[in-house]
Length: 370
Ligand SMILES: NC(=O)c1ccc[n+]([C@@H]2O[C@H](COP(=O)([O-])OP(=O)(O)OC[C@H]3O[C@@H](n4cnc5c(N)ncnc54)[C@H](O)[C@@H]3O)[C@@H](O)[C@H]2O)c1
Image 1 (tube, protein in one colour):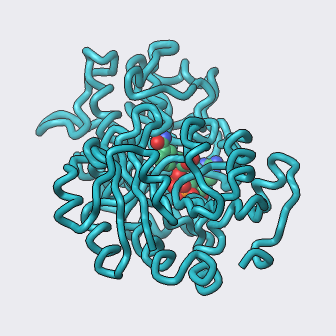
Image 2 (cartoon, rainbow, N blue to C red):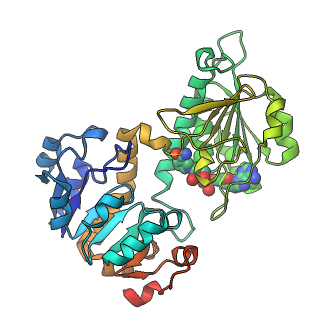
Image 3 (cartoon, rainbow, N blue to C red):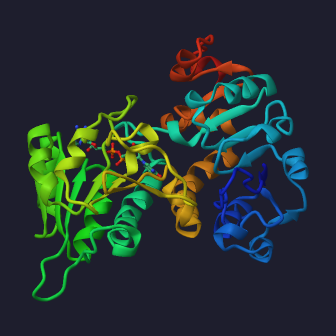
């Protein structure tokens, strides 16, 4: 198959859809890979690295879209890319269709085959191509939180791990899923006094078993959250209720119960946030302050560490990309239920129920396009 890897052109996006190691694997399976010049630069991969792995570099995005049967990228195509997409061309990338109607209509009109990372789903309902970004964001939440606890950045001026003779900071993590567990690991490793809260008792039991002694678990409810607020220095929002907006577990009125300089990192901001006062921010301007409480609410945290994020993402996407390239998308999706769930729009038809419902479009069962 002929595979194209364009350079991401969305604002501040430095990740790339395939690494040189990925090119090596694809070429080794008999495929041809074209990479747009400087596509890997933001993630630390030079054009020569791709050439050594067996790719051909093309100077423009038009040439990459023009030649490829399958495009592998990271973010959804933006307006300037729509006209480059050809009928029957397969796009394997994040789409998040339900959040942007014009993209859905554009992909229908282009007649493309859209396999969305975010809806590839395992039998246990886990989302294997979203997990790596939650791992990155969870770990980063502590790194950022520790930084913003510093006095010059308007935090309380407390060191996460303390020092001999001085107590460490207290970290409260709302949600013990992928983000929360990764955050807890980092905070615990830095020596903080950590509490993870979740509503799922089985999950709390599991976390209690595997976490080190400086991590406690606590049932998540309003009463318990209020009890911890006055004594905690760093609060991480990491809840997710699939398919729904995040619940506001910390309301504006609760801010007055915290000490000045407390830092809130709401990782769940991309689902509306679990802290009422959180509004999406950017890496250029990551924080704002309300009632002396520092709010960090960057909606694309992994974007700040493109080297790690690209490798984490492509570790997860490459095995699927190889199946698609080796068998063709129809056979690969027929053979693999996980991949089949990733099909969203196929040759003008919406084959993912959630997307059809979001925009009142006709839904075509995916089986009928295979
Ligand atoms: N900002 C970013 O850059 C970024 C990056 C990756 C993920 N995220 C977001 O982070 C959030 C968490 O993702 P995840 O992968 O960890 O999800 P997950 O499904 O693995 O975990 C969510 C956890 O929240 C728990 N939960 C639900 N209701 C709760 C409540 N009332 N109190 C406490 N816990 C509750 C669930 O039981 C579950 O354990 C999502 O909104 C995701 O989109 C953001």
